[in-house]
Image (tube, rainbow, N blue to C red):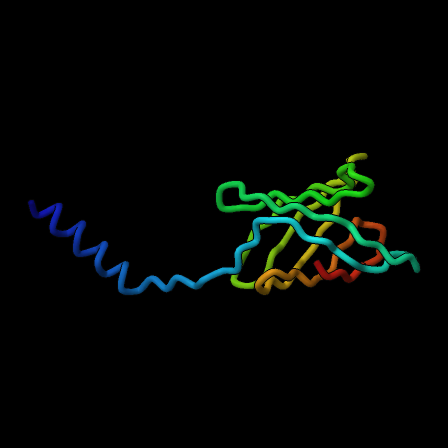
Length: 116
């Protein structure tokens, strides 16, 4: 009984200190737009939940062109990227309802801004 009382007391203390911040719903389909090497592009993006992370897939002509694994912290989505040929990259997005805006790079020294 004493162990149960201690456990309940600790849970109640923890609940009083926990702050849950609402996060925008990320799961869904987006159209990302940007400019790469002087060419304007529009690339469909799908975001799916995967436990506490997100799987991201960008498409070109219906084929996957980039895959990513994202972690959401507050209003920032950090993403590790991999290309179909095994190249790697990174992206960082600011998340607002129904919109992502950020920058990405696939390791060639350039950083590309895009809005989804």
